[in-house]
Image (cartoon, rainbow, N blue to C red; front, side):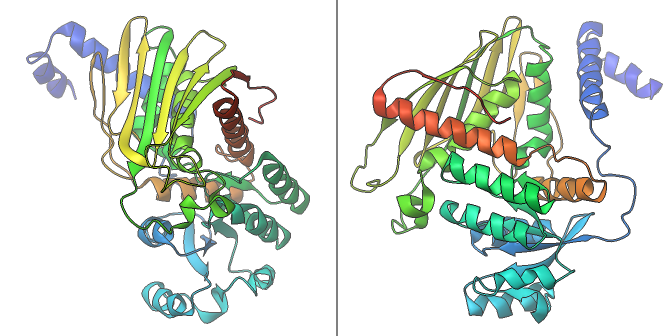
Length: 378
């Protein structure tokens, strides 16, 4: 270790070396507040996860991630497509007794092999299947956005409380090292008080114009509920407090395609400490960046929220942190907290807060007025 430090000092100034040591100490301070990862203890058993909805995210991300988890495993599926039952059963060794459809879903209550239900359905179905899973005695992970209304969020949380099960959100970036680091930089004021934050999250829909995300009855909102949650969370996570006000604008360059839902939304947050944030989301433009300016420096992630390949830098240099399987860490963390009867760090209240903000954004965009953000759930 001393030899390595001497070699390093030959290539950089003592001040730069001290800066790197300080950054490392900061990361240790962040990690000290969380359980060591991967957790060192070996569980007596892995909790069984059933994926509800076998679309692209379950197929491409969640199922593969569950092959890397330490505290949970893929144990069951729920699908309305019989052809997928055979494919998934053969690929992942799922027994027939752990395969359900939407008609017999409630009988999952009788299956001790299933501990967690992960709801990966169109937004308008989140509330129904979260509530049904809770009533079946299963813990729940719900994909974002939590629901299509605050009222649905309240009903989901009430059902989980009454059933004595835990509810968590599919907020994977809370377990990603670069995002954890910018949370630390902002919340601990490493570069002084934050003055300005910008966060952008969006992609361009070029085909498949019949998809459910463009139908209000299934999606609730368009880009705002899908990618906009990342922008909203990015600003709040970095600042470390909830905004007081939001002002928003909606734009459509393809109104014939985005007839029912929003295409592009910009919004501005005002935070209690004086920080302002400018956020943008779209289903008609590629954007993926988080940037924060402070009194004595800046930091950014470009790209900010993909599954892999997140990169960061600051006014002091690169944020060279490991790439991880975000979904595996997210699901393992929830399983760990279930096994130890602890609260999850991404609870349903956080999901409800974001839906409260989404509703305020839509109100502001419709009226052109600044909307106060009161009584947020988290």
